[in-house]
Image (cartoon, rainbow, N blue to C red; front, side, top):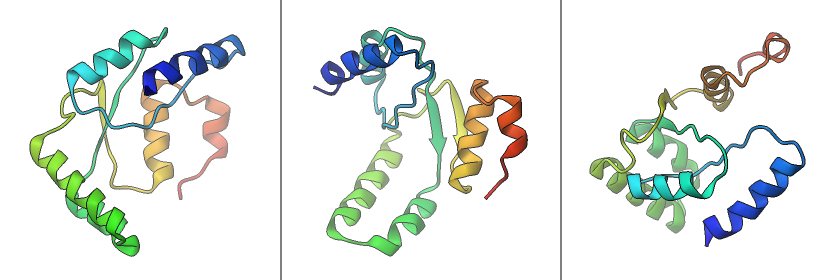
Length: 123
C-alpha cells in the first residue's frame, strides 16, 4: 500500500520541479529494496545509518512507554538478525547530533551547495 501511495505523490513532486527526495524508512531485505527501486522513476541512493544498540537505548530511555519498549525489542531483534545490513550505497555513523549526521549525508550525496554549507554550523 505504501508503494501504491508513494508513486503518484513522487510523480506530482517531480512535475512541480522537486529534484531531491528523502524517504526515512527501514529497509530490511533486498526484495523490499528492489520493490522500492522498481516503483520509483528516479535513481535511488540508500544510506545505511550505523548506530549501536546502546545509543538506541539511550535515545529511547526518556520516553519508555509500552510502545517504546516494543521499539527497543524490535530494534534489538533487527540488529541481531542483521536486517538491512549491506543494502546501503553508503554507511554513515548515526551516533552524533542529527544536524551533523544530516550534513554528512548531504555532503556524501553531493546535495549540499557551497553557499548553504558556509552559512551552517554544527549543533
